[in-house]
Amino acid sequence: MAATAGVRLPTGRQDDPDNLADIPWSTGAYALLVRMHHDYILSNLWQREAGIPSEADLLKTGTAVLNFTFRYDWILRDEVTIRAGAENALPTFRARVQRDIGDRFELEIGGRYVIWSGLSISGLYRYGFKLEDRVSGPNGFPNNFVERDTDSTEQVDIAQVNYSTVPLFLQGRFPLPVNLWVNYRDRFAGSGPRAVDSPSQVLKTRYIGVGLQFIF
Image (cartoon, rainbow, N blue to C red; front, side, top):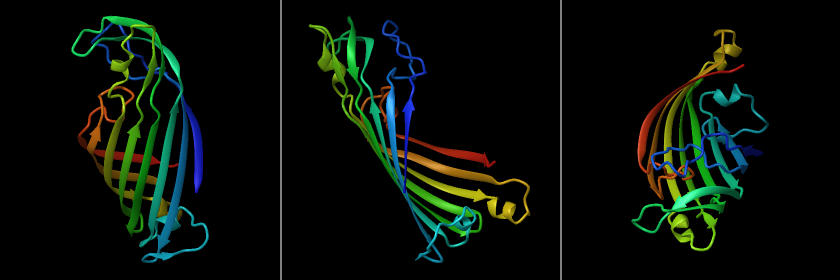
């Protein structure tokens, strides 16, 4: 079991409230990140193995690894200038507001099985959700329209095939430890707006990814 923590800095471009065609890629808010990880290692056709295995042991034929990850993003309050309007109306209200973007939570469950030394298959399921935003503006500012429908959810599954040259490298039969993988990712369900801080910017997406990793 392991725990990690971090900070997300809003270094990307924020929304321009006076440009309706602007496409931001940062919320403009700082976030504190907490991650909890746990791996459960199986081997020899699902028999539990004692001790702490090395990287090479994890790539032996018949080894299976189950993993669980919990993520929490605590998005800190900030102050921004935004525009808003009533329903089906132009955003004619402009104000400096106190904003608390809804926190985000993610739960991942996955597993990997080594078919042959270095060659493995894996699957992962992720459920994520974001809480509703809270906005405090001056009198007359339509806070309720700014906050409405800012909560969101997503469900994602990923299937992957991975090949590692680590066993061959340790045996002196390959010059570099390299990982190569191909995966299929499908966000098959979700709800919420297409906002920059929403995990469901595009509710239903599918694509194939290819990766190459060199280990030093």
